[in-house]
Image (tube, rainbow, N blue to C red; front, side, top):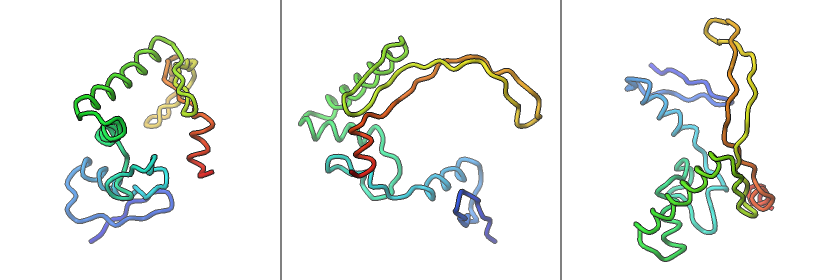
Length: 145
């Protein structure tokens, strides 16, 4: 017999062989992935349309092909960029890539909340979090204009 998973505007039949939460969540992620025109970036695309999120391997391949460097050099560049951005934002510095966007550290004030399991009122402490604001050129690219 089939079970159904309810997602926004979608109902998916589940295979009979689900044995655990990890398999279930992997199925839902795969099923909810859809082809997106944003998956094409300067002539590069994921291996198959709708293959899911592009990640580290894709970025390293992009750097390698665009800069004409080895895989090790591309991976070192990738790591250096991400570590540089992360450490700068953690120190409270603003990191801006012209036309792409800005990364910065933001503060969230303490606030009252509700525990969804018990309904009890709780105090959520103040915290700091990273924030990204897309640049105008990036927004236009995503809009398709």
